[in-house]
Each structure stands twice: as structure tokens, then as C-alpha cells.
Amino acid sequence: MTKEEVIASIEKCAEELGRTPKRLEICNLPGISRRTLVRLFGGFREALVACRLPLEGMGHPVGQEDLLLDWVRVARELKKVPNSAEYDFRGKFSLRPFNRLFGNWGNVAVELFKWMRNEPEDERWSDVMGMVAAYVEKAELNRTSGHKGDRTSGLHFRTGEPQYGAPIRSAVMTYAPLNEAGVLFLFATVARELGFSILRLQTAYPDCEAMREVKQGRQQRVHIELEYESRNYLEHGHPLDGCDLIVCWINNWPECPLEVIELSRIVPVIGSQNDFAL
Image (cartoon, rainbow, N blue to C red; front, top):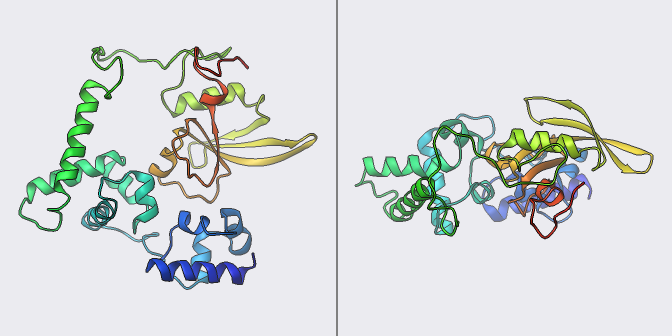
């Protein structure tokens, strides 16, 4: 697509939405991808400037009340408590200020519930108070007694002692990762078999810079973000620009616009249908 065609498509999307489109909404438009925006404009923000659209929620301070009221708006549209991907698609703000104020996405509903209980007569959220209360109650039940349907939910975990993932077939790592650090280590053990040679690791975004064999005798540089679950990419507030793929243990973000490598499909737990060793 040409720059003029992309601008026309984004402007039409903004008119239909009645607001500035978000990254995912623009990248879901026909013929437009993250790379298209980078190639033609230099990035998502620059594309909005070219379309003369307001940069809502980007670099501007947002109050806690504004965030929670917009969260309530999305909950009303969905008729349920939104997950991070649903809010990122429909919300006015990015996930970054939520993570900064509340620590993680799961705490947003908890904080809103506290606010509702402190102001029970406030009619701004009387219609969603029931759904939020039920969500918080279920989350607390899962936290204290295990997930429903889990055959080990009645067992008591001894506090202060480590836990391990399911056994996996790996010459280096014995048990499945339970966090991002475990994903990093496991990826390092299988990177060469997957065609990667790691150049650099860092604590800043993105986590990893590597060379990747794209065909025999040809390499390309890629930037990789490591997550335990692919959807954590959204909850951490990472942009789509600057990253080529996500490496994770569990891929729970089916609509992800980036390439995802799910390590649990490559190094499955022992006893799974795809049980094999690299």
C-alpha cells in the first residue's frame, strides 16, 4: 500500500470508531502491518501524526479515576470483566498506566471493587458492581484453593518451599519453566536447533537480540521479547514496534500480530502426545 492509501484507511477507521485507533486496530486493517507503518512513516505514532489524529493516552499523565471509569466503560460493552487483550483493543488508554498504578492487570478489578465499596451510593458503576464483586470473589477462591477442575486443587502447598513445572524432555532443563527467567534459560538451550544465534541479552525491552537463519547461507537480525505467557506482552505495556517475535512457554494470545514461538510445543512435557527430545 502507498502512504496515501494507508492514511485514508486509518482516517476511515478513526471516523468509524469515533476516536483515534489503537495499534492493534490499525494493524488489523487490510494491507496494513507493523512493518508497513515503520516502512512508510517510521512507526505507529508518526502514522497518527501524518493522519492528524490526536495522540490519546500517549505520553500524557492519566489519573486513576479516568483509568477506572474507562475500564468500567469497556466492561459495560463486553458485559463482563475485560482481560488485558480485550481492554487493549477497546480501551481509550494503553496498558502501561494501569501496570504503573496497579502492578498488574489482575489488580485493576480488585482496586475498582475497593473503590465501589468505599462509595456504595455512587451510581457511576452500580450496574457493574455485581460482576466485579463476583470476579474478585472467584479470583480469591482460585488463589486460596486452586483452580476449579484441577485434580490437585484440594492439596495443600507448603509455604516457603519451591514449586516445579511438569517434567520435560530436555538435556539441560529437567522441569518446565514457571516464569520468564525459566523461559530465557530454556530458549538458550534450544536456540541453535531453532536456527538462532544469540547476540545480546538485556533487561530493557526487547530482551534479546539474535541472528536467525532464514534460509541456507542467509541470516537476519531479529529482536525477541521473552514472556512466560504471550499475553504478558500486553500486560507489560510493550509496543508492537521494536520487536519481531515473542518466545514464550504458553501462547494464550491467538490474535497476536507478532510471530510467536511457543516452547511447550517444541519441548513438550513428558507424557504429552508430542513427547520427543530435541
